[in-house]
Image 1 (cartoon, rainbow, N blue to C red):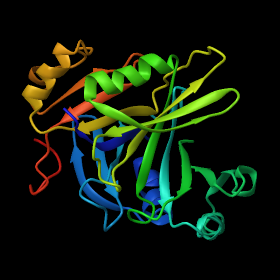
Image 2: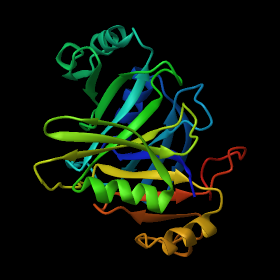
Image 3: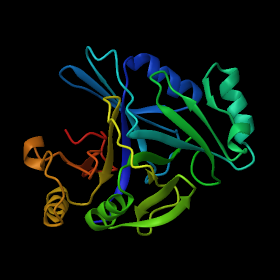
Image 4: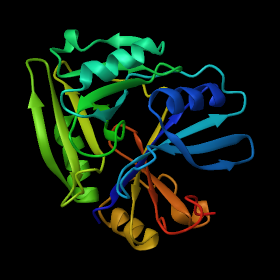
Length: 263
C-alpha cells in the first residue's frame, strides 16, 4: 500500500471567514461541500491543481467557536515559484494577512503567515505544481525512529529528504514514485524530549487508497491502530492513528465521480 496523500483537514471556528481567507489570499476554489448533522466539510484547492495534488479540507462543527491549536500540529506549506517568495509575501501583507515570520527572518528561504484560526501557513519556493498548492504538511513527533518506522512499515512510504539542525530534525516522507505535485509529510523531531498537546483545531491527514477493505486489512496485519474501521463508517472511509495520536484517514476516491465525497 503506497497511497497518495489526498488532503489535510483543519477545523475552523468561522467557516465563512476561513473560506473567504483561503479563496481571497491563496486563490483557492471550492471543490466540493458536504452538509452533515451539526457539521460542514468543504474541500478547497487551486483551480488547476494536479490530480495527485492534495486538497485542503476545512471542517466546521456547530458550536465550536473556540478552537485550540495544539503544538503537535505544525503547519501546511504552500508553493510559490522560485524567485517570487518576496513578491507573493508582500502581496499577502498588502491584503492584510497577518505576518508571522517574514522572508528576511527566514534567510529568504521561506516565510510564514497565519489564517484566521492561527493555523500556520509556510510559503516555500517550488517550481512545480500550481501556485499556492500544498507542498507538505508538518506534524511534530516525540520519537523520530518510531515516526519514520510508522510511515515506512505501515504505509510503505520512503524517506525522501531530511534536514538536521543542532536542536531538531525534519524528515520528509512520501510514497515511492510519488508525483512531484503530490504532498509530503514532514515529521519534525525536537531533541529535547518534549511532549505535545494535540489540540482540537488540527484534524487529520488523509491517504487515498486503491481498495479500502484490502488496504485496511493490510494495515491491521502491520499492527496499525484500529481507530475507526471501515465497517463503522459504512465502508466509506476509515481511520488509524500514528504513534503520537495523529489521526490518519483512509479513503477510496473515484476521481471521475461527480462528488469528492464517498456518500
